[in-house]
Image 1 (cartoon, rainbow over the protein chains, first blue to last red):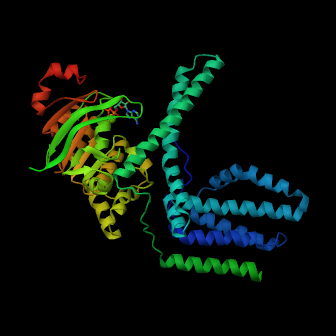
Image 2: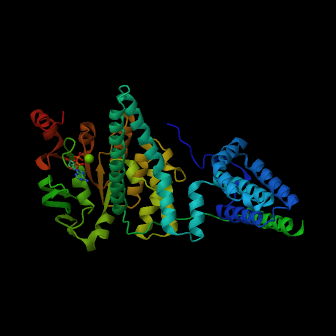
Image 3: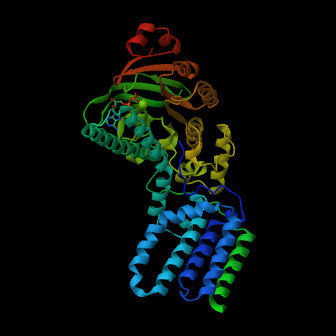
Length: 234
Length: 234
Ligand SMILES: Nc1ncnc2c1ncn2[C@@H]1O[C@H](COP(=O)(O)OP(=O)(O)O)[C@@H](O)[C@H]1O
Ligand SMILES: [Mg+2]
């Protein structure tokens, strides 16, 4: 069974992949804030921002089609926001549109060059609330288990399909959804027992083995310097 | 010889009131390997969960003379290593290393010791270098071995294994049995794979409908065909 992974390309090797997740986090969020704080009329700046994004994408070796796909998934949301801003004139409109697109590209770059568990460790390092990071860990771990289960059930439906008696089909569907809920509940009980038997006492801890390298520091300083130069002097 | 486990007249039912364990008694001595066999639904899993104190207070059970009580749970769970039937229930973190580290962090070990033990026990289950793997991407047999490593890493005195070879192909099953033979812990193994039980156990108990039917050496039990038939074991 094949799955989609949000960090599907995170196993590739490139300079961007090798950066410390914390450094990537700060650099890319800094980039997004710089873009957001730029006035919509400053066209040169946006051209430079775009060039930086393109260069980063090229260095990362991630297929461009991945970015295009992600972009189209999120396009409806951007359009919704843009629509609600139509009353503020074309400049604002253009600004919002470009800024959203750039932000999506940068976030896609961040999430697809960093293994998910490293991203979480970076968040933990930045004192992100534990309850949220733990939720993300469980979500990432079990979403695929759940999808597998769903695929198996779907196959079972196909085997039981017996023509166009819609009412009966609904009944079967209801049963399947019900059994998946119960299945998930029982699984959570078993997982909890497994946690307790390994001395769980209300706190999930992880060890973070991240190490900042010289190249990380050099990248961070030069990247921020470039952003500042573009933002202030051009 | 010291008694590792002492179960005296244990009865238990889940909230629906049906008796799952019925006046069950068993003594297990240090260093022994005991097989618990019985048909599906006999109560094997429920019995094993009791040993880890999953159901809380349980004065019918003593582990190395310590009764299962709330204030003893930490001590008892340190001594008991419970391997669940389904490794997806036991491996709840994203990476193999984080899963092994989970229990070790709860033990309060230092970071160096945790890294050391993770390497040592991944080696012991012949999966060296698997720490960085994503649990979801492992094969079933690999998951099973990682789960075993996560239990062994806590260096328990008693290994409790719930159908350790269920769903493994014959070769993987044999490899897993050879692996288990390497460990000198006191072992309690539930299952209905006769080959496995005969191969590693010093003593076999038949459990059916929550009741202990008989206790004996593997030879006594497996040569008694009518008994096995009666208990749906062949
Ligand atoms: N969480 C639960 N709630 C209610 N009944 C359960 C639960 N878990 C198991 N049972 C019931 O307890 C009996 C014994 O189950 P189990 O211990 O899993 O048997 P085994 O492991 O030998 O197959 C079965 O009849 C099962 O339906
Ligand atoms: Mg069972």
